[in-house]
Length: 386
Image (tube, rainbow, N blue to C red; front, side):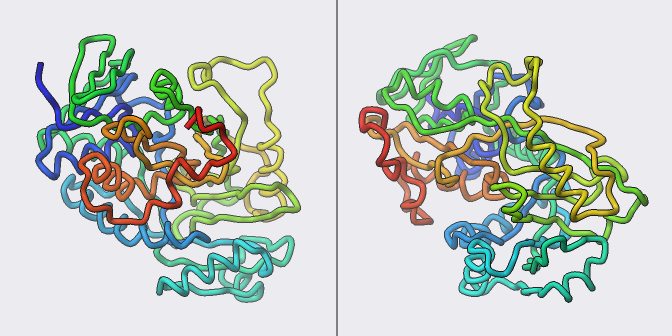
């Protein structure tokens, strides 16, 4: 039986970037994916995700500098355009704590940005109605990542570098040890280390290994809203993130028209609890509270859009209680590495996440402080579950 340097379970964007870093460093890596590729069952599919440096947590902003570099490197290696710069606009009242923290982070990290008062905002973006007198943060580095293209480009490069990807092959058993043994529906493999990047299925793999993480899989309604005047929210319109606590406790975000001609992607950054194996089962009474929130938001802030979604799709988030990632070693099996809980904002950061998971697997010097990502931060959970 061939011995791999690493096996990665889950070939979404986090798993693929992990495999990419192994392959770039001439390590023998195998990626296992339970579904046939490409598929829309996880969190990494779709045509577009937002990329920007705007976070209220400085550790993410620090990571994004290298993420942009690796995304550009992947574009060059694959010969595929993966990013369109649109700028990112953050909308909130100026006394909003996250708004102020984001301004502070961008200033401290030396990231180019502008703080726009309501008058400047209205002048620059006349097709947005500032229903509650919001201010704005303008991040010119923001834009759109072409998600489906990025995932395929990454998988192609991994194969070109000598990595192996097996899809349609579900993992049925993991036996810890040196080496770790992984059995699938097809055959058995061994590796020096194992990386689990299985999204909402993560705890299914961890339960037999003696731990459970506080992960909450959510089903997200991805909504597209038709322009009343074609082109009014397309070429010169930015991505945006809006905080409107009067309407809802979670952010609303949007991506300019592009995926579907004449339709803007506007989504709620939260969803409904779901069993990932049942996400495509029709529900007798689907919870559309989030869509009602979005309709109110679109009606109040985007008068140039129809206030009912023209198209609805679905994806999944896997949230942690604090919405920060888990990047850590199994507490009892040091050669089993876990990347989980990307909480709907992990795609843009995946180049560096993959690098960190590679470093953890090979016991290399870590490029970043992982304190915010250790599973031990969840002190409220029974030690037996961690």
